[in-house]
Structure formats: C-alpha cells, structure tokens
Length: 134
Image 1 (cartoon, rainbow, N blue to C red):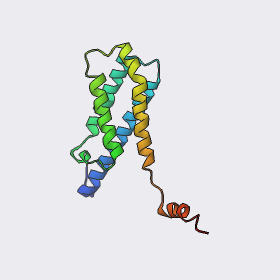
Image 2: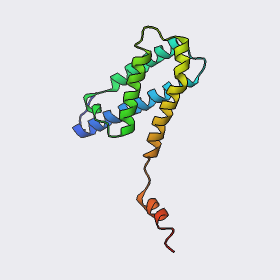
Image 3: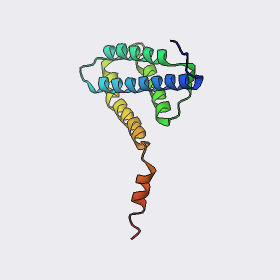
Image 4: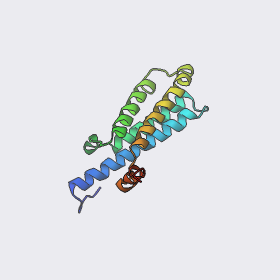
C-alpha cells in the first residue's frame, strides 16, 4: 500500500480503525453463529478460524494500542473463545450446545459495556442536571 502524503500518525490511526472494524465484525459473526441452532461445532470452528485469520492479518504493530476498554476486552474474549473452541482436539455437540447461551450472554455483556460508554454531548448532560432548579 502506498502511504505517500500521509503522516505516521494518520497511517497508525487508519490501521487501528481497520482493526477495530474487524474486531466488531468477528463479534457480530460469533453472535450470529452461536444464535443459529443449525450451526454445527465443526462449521463454527471452521468459520471462526477464517475470521481469526482475517483479524490477525489486519492486526499491525500499531493496533496493539486500543483506547477503549470494550475493544481490549473484546480482543481478549475472541482469543479466549478461540482457545476453547478451535484449538481443542474435538468440540463435541454437547459441549458446544452447553456453551452457546453462556457465550451469547458474554457477548451481550460486552455490547452493553460498549453502549454504556456512548458519547453524549455535554450540553445535553447539563440540561437534565439543571431541570430541577426552578
């Protein structure tokens, strides 16, 4: 990729944003697969492996620094789930079915963390604070 005309900081920001978008994509796909009763353990592992490879490709020395707690935790979550599913010898149907609900709950909790830190303009915060002032 030709980076002429861009500063190191701009390139690093772009690569970090690309990595963050990939983390989000992996999370959405994981949730979709866990929710779908028709997805078998082998199909889950196969797809997860591809998602993880794409995530690692978009990883760069500049992506190690993630600002948000949500993205750091999501990265850790993806790594842990990968270790427990894809890197085990055989993921049985029984184990996979037992973990579905738990892992969907974990993903939901992470999503709530992301939503709780959403940006709210300062002027809207103060409007609610001063309403009781008669």
